[in-house]
Image (cartoon, rainbow, N blue to C red; front, side, top):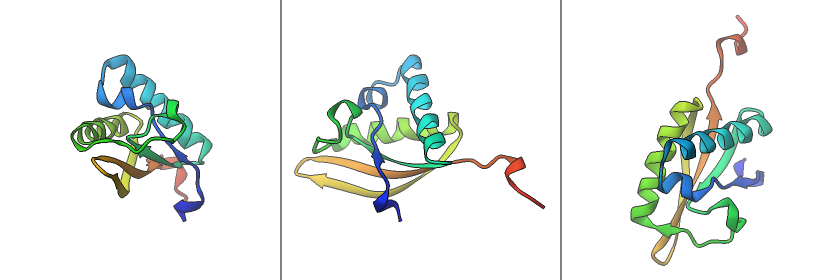
Length: 110
């Protein structure tokens, strides 16, 4: 199951302040994680890489913005995201997502 996997955390600034360059950087991060994970990875939205996973999260309003921007980025990858859980610590939250690359037609054998 996903519990045995390393949870990758995307750069938070990219998801809260979505500028074109930051979108591209986040998409590159996701593609790299998918390549390393052979087509799937787990990300925790609300905890920046810079903090090494050591953060209680972000306010729910900011998390909603970050998740919406994460969904937009998935379209660019292209990838499919599934929310696994929301973690709440006081007034701060994070969301854990399973991200899978979209299979290419040549991945299927008829």
